[in-house]
Length: 137
Length: 137
DNA sequence: TCGTTACTGCAAGTGGATTGCACTTACCAT
DNA sequence: ATGGTAAGTGCAATCCACTTGCAGTAACGA
Image: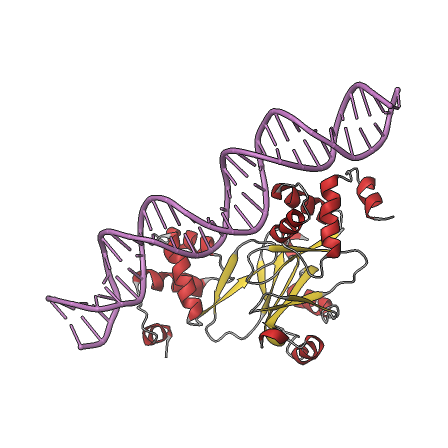
């Protein structure tokens, strides 16, 4: 079941704008904010409204096709394709804003410890590092 | 050197409103958003503008007297007193929004691994869990 | 190809946070 | 103790990410 099928299976439709949003996300090397995504679309001469970008991202997130992340101190949200990629975190350069994937997640074993400590049932976690990238050091 | 001295030593002044902001933060059991802080001040009949709350928080953060945190999916920032408290993280209830401290930080040893993997120089990290608190389960 | 209804664009609205500016006040030098 | 100056404050306006209302458009199953 490819992306197209997944969308259709949920009663949603594969529209011109939705295809364009997916295409830009698929080609991006790093998670995009709605505004950046919108700028990319404009660059590719796609006629689309920023509101439509927002609404498509909400839909795609609900369908589990994209992941939403919020990086510290950014004041905006970012999205990346989920598409077979495994759970991971990010590091962001404090100087140029560059965002790079981290392949590790050291937290899975921690859940039990935290549940014992707090009596919460742990759902998600968000982990993010910031620092200075090679170019900015 | 107490809080008062620290503020004075930096060329800042200890004003009526700044004292009130600090007092509310000191008495809070959990990190407060500017709006919550403002509401607390109003409840205590402190005459203050919301803008002044914001500006004081910026100043206190710059002085290292308070820590700013951004919890995932909240869309607002929170502050807590630093005051001798050691580095820690938080867990937030997805249902009622309750925020509880975690005493552990499993990430210190990870810095070297990440620096090797990414060639970044790691500065800060932000880690946050969410789940369901005992009352909301 | 037609009808339903998801989707879109435009405009307006929210809410958290910031900025400009004139007035006020803390506090140090005298 | 007091007067000058620069930090701090309040108010209004603004910014910016994001959301909502609504009328018109288009995907796609029948």
